[in-house]
Amino acid sequence: MTDFKSLLRVLAERGVEFILVGGVAATVHGATRLTLDVDVVYRRSRQNIDRLVLALTPSRPYLRGAPPGLPFRWDTATVERGLNFTLTTDVGDLDLLGEIVGGGTYEALLPHTIVIQVFGLECRCLDLPALVRAKRASGRPKDLEAVAELEAILEERLRAAGEGPPAPPAR
Amino acid sequence: MTSPLRLPPPDPVIEAYKRDIDRSLIRENLKRSVEERLEALTQMQRLAEELRRAGRRAGR
Image (cartoon, rainbow over all chains, first blue to last red; front, side, top):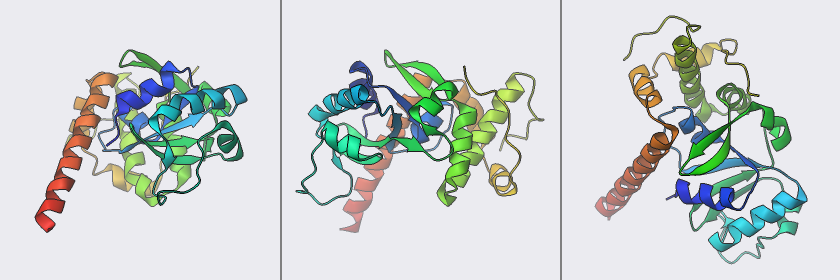
């Protein structure tokens, strides 16, 4: 089980520059669907990769779904050679993404983020329109319902601001 | 700076999915704080894990 609070704390307290995307970002914006891992886009600078490696080392990251005993080394060189990592850690499952379809890198996403205060921490999260764009661009059939929910949330927020389409009836 | 709050051009497939979205659930969730939403997600995950365990026990 993923301990969202601990995972965010591990990253934020070490000063890792990251942006919440995916299912947890959807939850932040009001989605009600269950998600089991944390997806983040991290800055690919040498300094940040060093911070990321230091932050996660105590939580023993390993490649999720890989057989035990592979010669996987969690260090700066490994992260620099790769881009996206699906990891399991002692505090839960974490997808570390160097970039995402429909959004790009940390730097490209940065103008489309909000800062949230949660569990006494400050984290960056992809804003709702950018999250919708990224989910649409991923084109995965499993995301269609998630996109529909995010767009419904966007409609509700626009309506609350007096700009949305007429409210469909609550089911 | 954030993205302007506006709807993307409608996609017929997504519009079809949207008809089945439970708006009342969304409206209730939007009244919660971000922290409350993440706490609810953790509880939901705990419940799902417990149900999976129960299913495995029953299948033995």
